[in-house]
Each structure stands twice: as C-alpha cells, then as structure tokens.
Image (tube, rainbow over all chains, first blue to last red; front, side, top):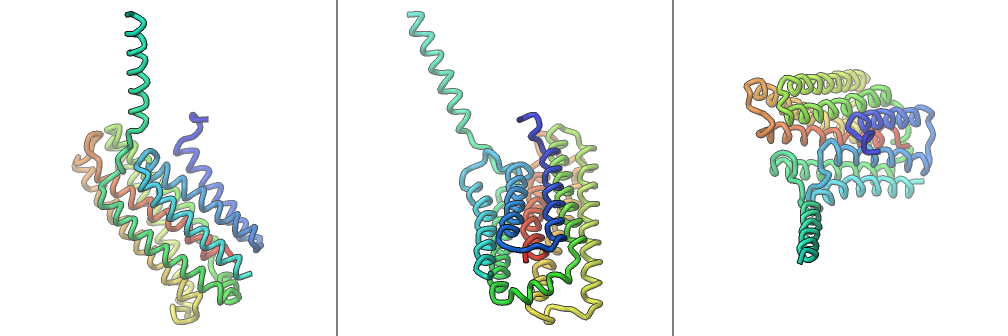
Length: 86
Length: 207
C-alpha cells in the first residue's frame, strides 16, 4: 500500500473528490446525508493537505491538534448548524 | 558472559529503535509562518461559523441566491488550487534534492494555476457586479462577497510570496541544505488551499 500512497495519488484522489462533490451540487440534492458527504470530502481533502502537502506528519502533537482541530471543528459546526436549520 | 553481551546488544538496539521513533520532525519552514497560518485559520474559521449560524435564520434566502453562483467556476477553481498546491509540493521536493531548475519550474506552474484561479474568480465577480449585485444587496451576497474576496486577497499574497521565492531561487539562494524559505512559502500556499477546501462546499454546494 505504501508504494501507491504518494503525493501524486493524493493529488488524483483530491481532484476526483472535487469532481464528485461538484456533481453532487449539479444534481441539486439536499439533506443531512448530502451535507455529511460534502463535509466528509472536505475532511478527507483537508487531512491530505495538512498531513501530506503541508508535511505535518511526524511533527509535534500540538500542531497536529491545532491544524486537525481547526478542520474538524469547522466541519462539525457547519454540519450541526445545517441539521438545526432543517 | 557471551549471552550477557548479546542481551545487552539486543537491549541497546531496542532502546535505539524506540528513541528514534519518538523523535519529532520539526515544522516545515519558519515557526513564525505557522503562528501566522494559525491566526489566518482562526479568522477564516470564525467567518465560516458566522456564515453557518446566520444561514440558520435565512436558509431560504441562502438556498435561493446560492443557485445564482457559478458552480462550474467554483469547481474548476478548486481543481486549480489543489493542483497548484501539488505543484508546490513538487517544488519543495525538488529543492530538497538540489534540483533548483525543477524547483523553479514547479513554482512557475503553481503560479500559473494560481493566476488561473484569480482570472476565473475575476470573471465571476465581473458577472456579479455587472448584475448590480454588491455587499449591500442581501445577507447572502454580503457573506459571499466578503468571504471570497478575503480569500481572493490571500491568494494574491500567496502568489507574491511564491514569486519572491522564485526570484531568490534563481539567484541560487536555496539548496538541499538551505530551503526554509521555500518551505515557509509553501506552508502559506497550502493554507490558502486548505481554506478554499471548506469555503467551496460551504458557499457553493451545501443547501
């Protein structure tokens, strides 16, 4: 698995996830499951950027908590406020 | 006696392996940029949360006017920023292997993709402003324009940083032993991409 896990593959996965979320937007569906899917895609892409593009794999726990904490807390707040608005 | 020696050697090996595993990697680039990144993420984070909370009270309005946005441009811009970020990763990797020429070429490619983002974003703004829309039109457009313009200027600043790095790299300022400047600029650029990764679905897609 390690052989395939590299920045090129990550770039491809992020492009594919973007295309998939864009298509979701096109078919004009809404609802909690759609929002969870869109935010999950952002979490995955965001994690790739933090871990592999920014290179924060192996750095101190503090900075991992700061960066991933930011990503997760924003996505959770968006999901919660969205589900309240329904 | 031989057995004791063997056990001692094995013990040291285990200790050596355990100590290297705990060894932490330093943050890439200058520490100061990470505090700057942290502050920028906080500001954008507050912006995103306020957007999500205000949307609670105006969901019909947000859903209605969200449909007026150009999602095609939004999606292409996401692809451009992700690709530009990937090019910057390749630039950092190249300089770590003393390949200055490749590093400069990847940085140019990143700047090109960044320019593409700015051009497409400007096309989007021209269409919106020529329809007579501005920050006072309604709550949705106030958020949309201020959030995306704020990010727009961060992209411009990021490109200025990358361009300054290209100029220094051409003068031979960076090599495998000295490339903190490139890592610093790269970290900022990745932050600009990270913010857009949240902004795009939040503003263009979630309804």
